[in-house]
Length: 252
Image (cartoon, rainbow, N blue to C red):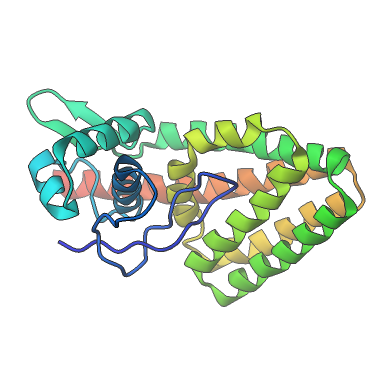
């Protein structure tokens, strides 16, 4: 089995990788700890749904696939279970956790508050140079949206939020977001599944940047919250449709 991985896509340090690179799923002899590499590869496979919801993750198979020892796989599985990507089922062992609608709602709620707060703090604390850099990243996000390239959107938004969070100068915000980062990437792919949503996102990013350039804290908070709420509506609707479709298929 070969599972592809793409270079990093997220906000700030200790990021996770985007799941669609075309390299082999084998642990490399690099400086990162083996457990970290294993966790990252399994995380990417789950995010990309190459490991499907409710699929068993058999230690022996994973060891052979990755070319690593069982202790490394077990440590990685525990890490992913803490992130909510894996659950342990009695008599079955680790399986890929299904992303449920209620979980998605909760993630969007937390993300909205934290990212809106980051935008407000950015207005307060960022330098003029950081505002300029955020504008550069916003233009790259817009170009990715216009191209309809979801991988590029995820990558450029990661860079955008990296600048935003650095300028906000509250290290707790990225620390909290990191706990739900893998799910955020999954949901971002859901919310960007329609061209209409992509077009709306361009306008929303403009609203955020306009407020930030004026250093209007309240407007930046509001625009950021509205951006996440719109993404939540699109993502949850798609997730709900998929859940209903699967129920219908089981019933037929």
